[in-house]
Image (tube, rainbow, N blue to C red; front, side, top):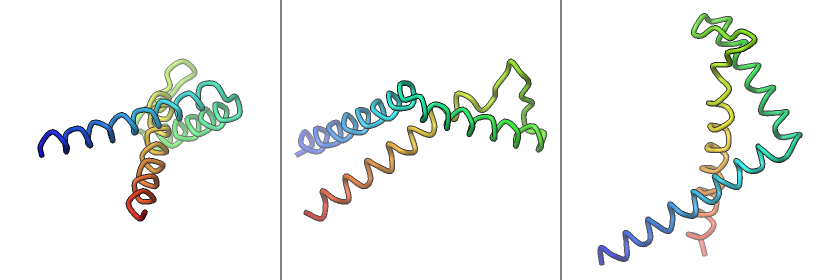
Length: 90
C-alpha cells in the first residue's frame, strides 16, 4: 500500500513539474508574456523603492528573479489544483 501512495505522489510531482516548466517556457519564449513579466517586475521594484525595503537602480533588480520564477510557479499551482479538482469530480 505504501508503494501505491508514493507512486501517486511522485506522479503528481512530475505532473506539477511539467506544468511549471511549460509555464516557464511560455514566459521565456513568448515575447508579449515576457513584456508583461518585465513590467510587473519594474512595478514591484518601484514599490520596493518607495517603501525602502530594497533599492533598485539601473543595474540591480531585486524583484526580477522572484517575478520571473514566482509568477509561473503560482500559475502552475493554480492549473495543477484545477486539474486535480476536475479529475477528482469525475
